Image (cartoon, rainbow, N blue to C red):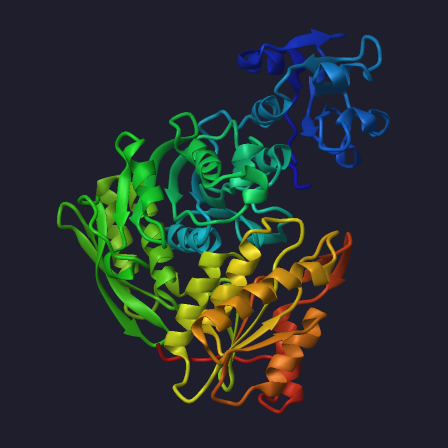
Length: 538
């Protein structure tokens, strides 16, 4: 857990007043000084407010003794948790501990001040990571000292640490923002997941600009229905969470979600992806629109036009039209975050002939490992992501080659998408190798079964000659794909992207798709070293 070096001393009664919307009550003395906050008894430090929250199986108050031994100065909990708090020990009692947790963290780390970095938040099913990387690169090119919070890593003024969650828990998130302020970060881009909104992790932050990529089936194990999934995303676009909102209204396989969102927001800035949209449909005039699109090497050149006629032409150096969508959203978010007089500076950077911010590689996102065969690693782990990745691969592949996909489904997650992903793989690939992703505590073979069934159902329905294989563990599946490939083939390893460990029955198993693939490319004589780069034609 990263914390600012300069701790603030905030009185417990001041925190209590900041939480008045949660109707708090107190126990014990309230003049104690609080210097930090944690919801994990193992990370509590001297002077912390320990947040004891009710979980699915345990209550945080069950670990109160450990929190007190490691220095907790006070407790934030509910009435059930208060039963475990020692008599006259400083405590704040609320019923909505999750909501109060984020607002308490904001008060403790002084993130309610105007001195915090300008935050750019990106939400949506797919594209969050790449879009935040693009926003970060453009802001840096404009001379900002930048921060980044997301799935792959956290960056603070150029320093990087590995991330554990797409969006950190509220105490960690607010601590990171305070550390960014301490490191003179002026603007930061971050991914905002639906989980983080449902669990109120981002409460207490007002984003300068937020952006919406798309909405497709995912995380229904948490949200239950697409409507509830949308409602969680929608929270980010409320005025108390964001100042300016950018919504993609023509993009993804179901643009109706973006349009519905834009109609619920006063003064929403809208983006029509035009020729870059997965499904092009008639939409009301948008604030910004992609008007021209052409293939250039492995990526695309596109023109982005404002409703006033102002326009910019730029390039994205990653395969797939969905990366045009990510780049276009990133550009519009930064334009929206700047006053109009600053637009020409943005345009000059995007128009650069030699290098644009959208030529930056994003780890594990359509990352090209080799050229012959073409080997690509991508994070695609849901039906829409898999469809778009396979479509991009097929547009890029050699006419004489096959598309080979290696992927699995995650355990203890939305089970309904498993046969869908199998069907999609069989539709777009010539060889489908079903393997394991993160089984967690579920039996791996039971996860693979509906994926294989979905693939076979598509083959039977279409009478296709797609080959279906089931190979586990994952490293053997990746090795088999390389072993069966010709120099003309394209291999897509999907689902894990940048990740370096599998969770198998709660134990971390070290595996990086990129390194496994490189080793096997060497073993089979395709490359002479473990490192390779590639140039595709799209």
